[in-house]
Length: 145
Image: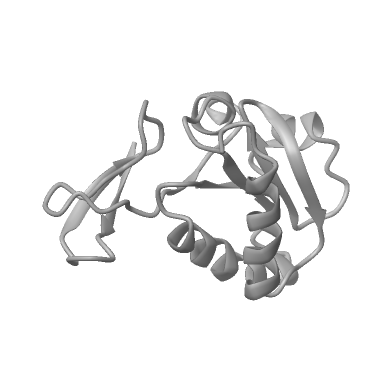
């Protein structure tokens, strides 16, 4: 499964796979591309835990108002940290095993996962600038600096 993503540098459309060994780059100009994908119970480990970059995991549900507010901030973080971070959205209604695995009792819950290990956790909505700052602090503690 892949998404079509326009390059922020040259606007060329690129296919970005949900899982890959490296991080996505534009086929035309080689700029780092935002990596925003969805995952569920069956592919979470492949998409997020085994990702070559730290992953920002957004555990959300479509009926959750605060989750819908956080969604654009997660997309912004994927763009801001292109080449340094993978953003993974997990609908908790469709992925109960993932939410149980991380003990999610309230949504939205945001995690930064690096090499399968949670290095930061935030429950509740964050404004876009606060989310970017939170991710920046989490990446500073990442083993893959």
